[in-house]
Image (tube, rainbow, N blue to C red; front, side, top):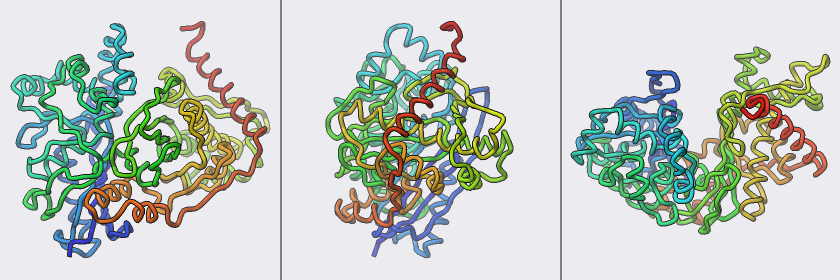
Length: 500
């Protein structure tokens, strides 16, 4: 009897396959990295063909690790790096390398659209800002600069998609060209209120509507995999979501006001808003996420660009750590940061400031400052950035955060999690399975494939969590946040002297 849920988690640096039982416990997994291509400064590309080959290989390895045959797979889920774009032909052959979400090549196109006063319409309809981060301006760049893509756009043979759509097309032997609401909402082409591709936005971004995938709920039927195409697996694809929305679902944040934060190189904080949209006024993005039935709901999203990367910088840049894991013990050896504040704007500032010119700083240094104080300031900065976003989301949504659910590698740092609880003033709940992205896609597939009920899935998702409770008072929180905000404003002033 088919009993496993196979999840393909296609990320920025590699592709993972995880075979889950119906109890959503992993039975086998495999991971392969793919090459990063940097053809010009600020450009980032992936070979979509290499990613597909890796997807096949990790699928085979994960099933072998679970000691099962492909026939054991009852449903397939997909989660993916968002905003990365691929254009391919009817045979599934990419017409160019995938343009990665990190790629900045469409900066000039964004500037051109802003000068025409068009950012307001994009923000109103998509909930996003005009930034090279998002898919639509990447497509516009390809239409203007890649002859093969431009020709395929003209003759109608092109298929566009984020990475989930490309993998789905290949898994189904070319039968399915679809995506889900969460991925569509990250393209700058999708009206999140009317839940459809927007003809005007598509025209502004030179993207033919005919090349866009069908948009479906995140839990449901997307197509059957072709065993000849997909490593012998013949099963329905029943769950798809972008990585951060998959993690939100995988944390069981299915109701308004429930939020999760993923701690990795950066942090992604998402709050479920329910069926009512709110416009983010201070740098928050409004996007689509998954409700309890896998259908679309609204969410706020805020990005912290540098989180775990700040600790990596202490290790590789300042060389005050031999290993990132040492940061907890070193920081804990000091009772506080000794007045030191770190603003880790090593690649600019994300929400709420969105200042690409800002650069990192250490403020409040004295002769008494040592390695321990700097390490503690780095952990405090990670927690402070996330706390600012959580405060902003509560203020702009009118929803009260009762706890914050967390996942990602940096949640192993108990001092960081304690600081986060102290700065939020609410419990921080660490997931039993730290990698919630693949788990969320598997849960969507289980729901969409009718393998478990919503209540059964939610209970499994929230099992074995660790809770960190706040131990500091409101006055301490206010002081820490005020000092950090003053430091951010100083960094911004330094980046823009005399209003430059």
